[in-house]
Length: 226
Image (cartoon, rainbow, N blue to C red):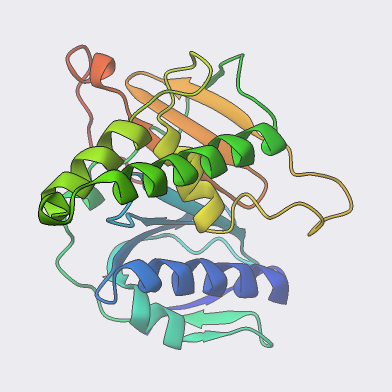
């Protein structure tokens, strides 16, 4: 049975927090793990946001690993105080687990608002959704109608960057964009691009999406760490 040894207990705690949030959205969530070169990347896809979430952690050793597992079982195998995780048996990966962003070739994209601006945009979108939902007639307040409103709002791009608003919402909901006051200084945010992918990165994790424009120009191939 493979065990992962984190560089610090807080790395184990951060990974556990990420898995806990994923399971909140999907109790049967699977995650793809890639380890190598003293680092671990955990990929998950919360269904509510239609994005790929990535949490990284430093490891003590050079363990090489590429496996898809149950998020819940992995969470159960994490010993935060010991800085250790037991890797559970593999599961059949969902389709998204074979389509990961590239490891390299990323370039910074200008124009992304700061963390406060992103939180403000998310808050305004949530308020708009609630207002439009309340305006629906009783007979028209169906799941399909509400989904249409949500899709229209969360598909809007942020400040002309091409990044959909749902990416910022996901970053906030998954703990990658902590609330104001949680840290001595606000968290830095960066937008990166590689081929058809856009990635919102903070020190706590990343949210990646494939843009519609890029899908017709560049194929996506599975990426494996050596």
